[in-house]
Image 1 (cartoon, rainbow over the protein chains, first blue to last red):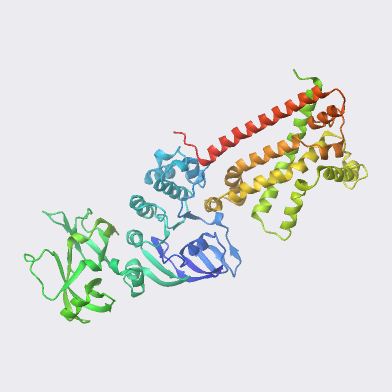
Image 2 (image 1 turned 45 degrees about the horizontal axis):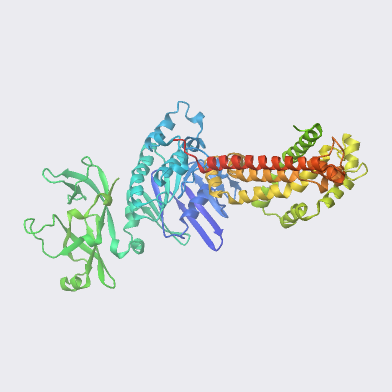
Length: 363
Length: 232
């Protein structure tokens, strides 16, 4: 997808020039007011661009030079808003059918697939006002999908929901992309959702694109540090399930280069790829390696210090572990006592119990 | 129970009021939409002009209609010449006078409900492939239906009670333009007809009550539907 757009809206200027993958989930991340929603509204055609070019696959939606501007209702784009925006005077079935074209689904199998995927069959005859927030959002996703869009835009679809509802909905979102092979552009300011869903990531600030790439690349990039507040600084790692422990509920993850990380059991087949989040506060550093019978720590890796960032009350140490990267937070006292310096080799210890079910996602 | 004279007055009044509401409704919806959704150069002027019948004495409106629809008036003359139609001194004239007097009431009610419609829902409909016309008829119109109903009832009530503009424009002709208020006026003018006047007074109250209850029931029903009644 080619995006080269600029727009001016009361005191706010947005100017983006980039290319986005036509498959997978592309996450647009940034603070509120950074222009995330503006960008996808421009893509949908809900607000007018002042200048530029927008095309998806081989379809041109907007081109200021060629005077092309396809109106919203003719762009093959689905849009899931932050609020479900269900039509209150129509029941769930009628809401779902609003954008549904029977001629594209003569045997009704797509309709069935969607209502099964999102489990909305039991809601069909109810009215939006009687649904919970999570149910409403599921219906609104179904409604957007039934139009058979070529691209799905989602504007913080989970932001208005409470934590349990978010957890309830996340797996559905993951399935959408994988089962329906539908590319998604997903706006969020939640790192949890990035970890769970993102393939590609765009980092926006004040209407400008400041970073773009794989989620791991952007997440671990120094420009991303301000978003990861000191108490939840973390690194993202790629791993694959290597073995399940025969006796304990633990899984061994291969971080590459035969480095095995033991974590709480991950119910995935061997060799399944996962993305893992390790918090900087869960890593401690030691100069000598204790044997496994002397320490409770199961995961001890030889690492190299790449960078030391001093903060007011602590130090963030960036570590290289094979091709992966880790962050460790330690006190200034420890930093001085261990006399750490860049390029020094030492051992990083990671507690196996510190990695929870919400710290990894299938990938 | 009702005398033939009373039945005539009632049916004429209903005919006039219903036609007045019927012809002005589409125009009122369009005008309300213009005022609520569009910005144009002479919008304040249109708004002021529209509210004139609300503040002008009805007799002024009746007089203006009279001179413009008279056989030599600037509307009456071409109307008679090209279509051989004359509406002065006919029930159609009474309907026109009522429609004009009641128009601002109808527009105001519809405009208010249009302004209350959540534009986000219309936006959502357009992302689902609906063009502007479909959005209007499937989303906007159902959502403003309570406003339309209250506008219609208000205008209907105003039309039933129309007196000044009607008597000035189409006069008080028995069987042709003598609606309930005009008939009552005639009885009051006639010595010894107090009883007949009183009967018409009761009939007026009855019609008003029925209309109000009907609107209450209708609005309640529709509100219920829009808010999303659950069928479970």
